[in-house]
Image (cartoon, rainbow, N blue to C red; front, side):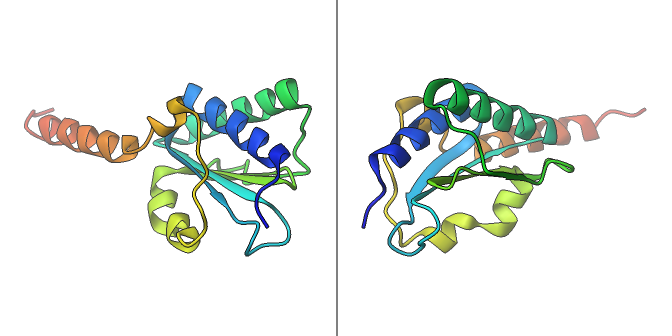
Length: 147
């Protein structure tokens, strides 16, 4: 069994929305062979809680406007560290970068086929690592000055 055309449309729209809001490391997996409850997972991350929420809001808005899809469940809003949107056909996980590293969902689903995504979404790969490097350099520069 493979992801349905509807699932692929939802994944592509959600991935583009995430990329438009500067998500990091957007990736999608076809989990239809191992899970009966959904066809695909979309994973994305951001370096802060506010951006996690902005990405989720954009995904929800775009899927409703472009595909007429509303999530049946939304979890994780209170802390905005890991928000899950369940559309039945797909499940979207938007995580704070620290949660993304800690929970390593890619490791869990690495045996599932990766889905092709729009170019903008593919271009987000490695952004979390790049952001962490830049942040570390800024922090190191800031350590030298006296208050």
